[in-house]
Amino acid sequence: MQSTVTHTDLEGLRLVNRGKVRDVYEVGEHLLIIATDRVSAYDSVLSPGIPDKGRVLTSLSRFWFETLEDVVPHHLVTTDVHEMPAEVQRHADVLAGRTMLVRRLSMFPVECVVRGWLTGSGWKDYLRTGAVCGHVLPPELPESSRLDPPLFTPATKAETGHDENIDFDTMVGIVGGPTAERLREITVGLYEKARALAAERGILIADTKMEFGQDAQGRIVLGDEVLTPDSSRFWDTATYEPGTPQQPLDKQLVRNWLDEQGWDHSPPPPELSEEVVARASATYREIHLRLTGRNL
Image (cartoon, rainbow, N blue to C red; front, side):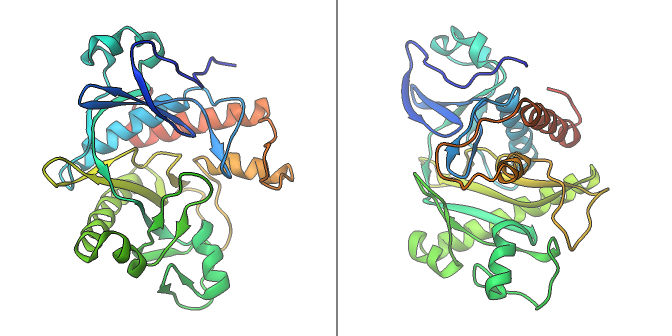
C-alpha cells in the first residue's frame, strides 16, 4: 500500500481548522489549505486513508478553477509549494501536490448544489414527495433521469452532522434575495460549462456542490474545492443507463462498500478493506486523468 498523509502538524504555522479532510493554516494574509488523504462518509472519518486522494483533490480543483475563471473569480493563488512563503516551503516534502495557497473569503453559510441527474438525496426526496427541494417534477421519472434544465438545490452548511437540503426561499432568508439569485445563476452557469466539457471526455457530472464567499472588494468568489470526486457524482457515459443506480467514479463507491458491510452509520465506522482502499485510489486517479488529460 502506498504511503498516505492523514495528519499534519506544521511547525511555524498556525492551524486554524482541521476538518474531515482538510487542514487549514494561516499564512499571513492568506490561508493554506492542505488536502490530506483522509476520507469521510456518513459524518465519520474513516481509516485508513486513500493514497493520492489529497493530490487528486488539489490538482483537479486547480484544473477547474482555471477552466472556469471566465465565469467567476476563484480564491486560488498557487498550488506550487515553491511559490509559497518560506515557512511553507520548509514543509515541502509533506505538502507538495496537496496544498493550495488561497485568498481569504467571507464564506456564505450555504452549499450551492446543482443536480443534472436524479440521484442521491434528490432521488429519495422525489420518491417521497414528487419534488426535489421545492422543484416539482413530472411523475414516474426513473432513477438516474437527466434533468433539463438542471436543478439548483441549496443546502445549509453543518459544522457537525448532515447538511440539510433547503428550498430557494429558505436560502433567500439566509443570504438575501439578490445574493441568492446571483449565487444560483453562477452555480448553474459553472455546472453547465463543466458538464459540457466533461461529456466530451466521456464523463457525466450527475450533481455537485460548490461554495462561495466574498472578497475584500465585495465580489462573489468561488472557494473551497470544485468538481472533485469528494464534492461531485461522476458517471461513465459508456455505462450510463437510466432506471438503475450508476457505477460511481467518485467517493460514492466508499459509501456503497460501507452499506454492503451492514454498518448503521453510527460511530465507530468499520475499517476500510485493502481492496476498497485500492479501488478508491485507482478511481480517484482515473477521474483525474479522464477530466484533465494528464496523470498526477
